[in-house]
Amino acid sequence: MTSTRHGSAWDLAQEAELKFWKSYLGMIPQDREQFVAGQLQRGQERLSQFDLDGIEGRLLDVGSSAVSMHEGRENLEVVAVDPLLDAFCEAVPTFARQGQVGNTEYRCCEVYDVQDGPFDVIWCVNVLDHTDDWKAMIGEFARLTRRGGLLLIGVDVRCGVELDSSCHISAIGPQELVDVIWDAGFVVEFHAPTAITKKQFYFCVRATRR
Image 1: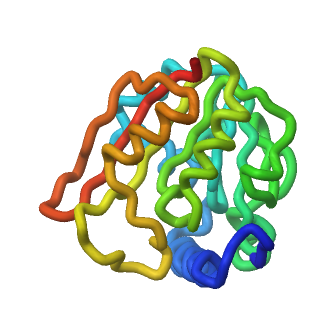
Image 2 (image 1 turned 90 degrees about the vertical axis):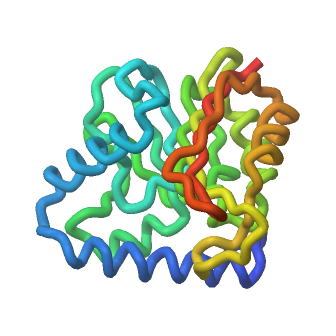
């Protein structure tokens, strides 16, 4: 989990993330196929504005965790990357996989290590606020997305409040996020908040590589 690209805060965030998923997956029935189907259903409900049924081609799932919600989906060739994948395979072997599983190739690495672009779609949900340099990650998305390709981001954003979890180490403002995406070479098609509270909400951005 240690990387020369990151500091101690990121290492602690990775440890907290592993602890969360180990606990969460340990509480659900040990049926991987059912879990994968549930992941997709929950994603379609929360991220309906992304029109998941309409995306196709080669998709990079950045920070896929133990299981990519795009595993098994038609018309998609998925590369799912997560720096904790080796640890997931050890901690929750019923769920986590290495290598090719159906339409999905699982890799234990970071987005910085991916060299076989371009991709038609970059998928990054519940990840940016868990990293210590989210702006650099968006630069990597630009490197890996074909011209005209899609960037789909979902992230918790904070409105001037302290972070409430050791997993969340970057406080991201919505306008700042949109500006960085634009500056990286994308045209923002839309952005929309969901699940709004006074100080924190979920924020979705869809953009195309120009």
